[in-house]
Amino acid sequence: MRKNSGIALWNRAKEIIPGGTQLLSKRSEMFLPDQWPSYFKRAKGIEIEDLDGDKFIDMSMMGVG
Image 1 (cartoon, rainbow, N blue to C red):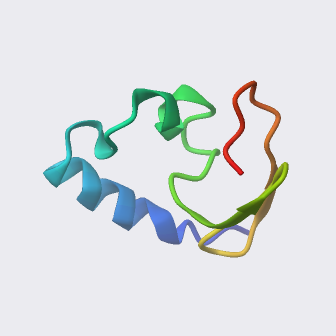
Image 2 (image 1 turned 135 degrees about the vertical axis):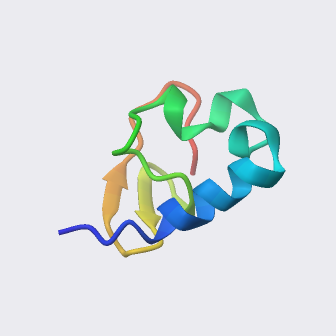
């Protein structure tokens, strides 16, 4: 089960930064809301790891890692 450590951080960011980030294309809502992580611990190639250690495969066109 995911801990979702990034949710509190994301909510705080949205309080002080419009949209939680400066880039529309990198907002988690643009991918898969409530499932795609807002923040990454590390990203390399197509592999992404969130703050809780959950791993994802980046299959978006522009890539994150």
